[in-house]
Length: 187
Image (cartoon, rainbow, N blue to C red; front, side, top):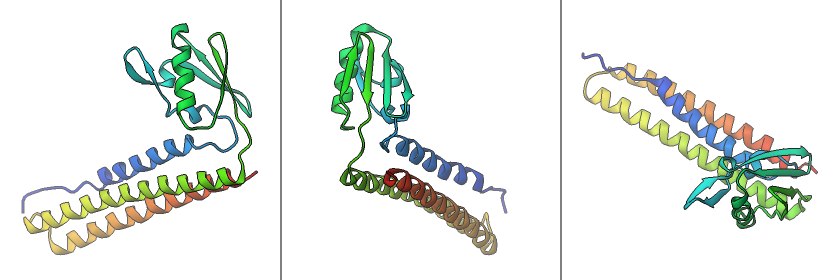
């Protein structure tokens, strides 16, 4: 048998990537508290291209219900305001010079339920991504066995490890979702 190796750590890294994306998406879900990650996904039309807000301004949360955005270039203030309004976050910017203030209003119960649905959608997308990585890994193992680089027993043992890793990451996604759901629904 030729030495072809199967790298389960690579699969785990790819699954961890799905968790990283999920955490980033959860950071953008509004929970009634001001966090700079709330405006992270906002893209601003600037200098003839779309740029992330954090490449045009400094975002801080000086109070629990207030975000301040210090725009570096005075000519970009209007573009940043427009991007915030178009972001569907339900936030109204109030501008003084190059500083934009965003008051974070209390969330209505209906809005909280909508946010929980969005969180579930993000979590499901992360689970699908993890399952795709599992499928890729299992397909690679089957091909290695077919090409006689692995014995049937070795293939089954590695497939079991892939499944264990998948179960572990799916459980982590469920736990992150439960925490986020509690955070959103807690008044």
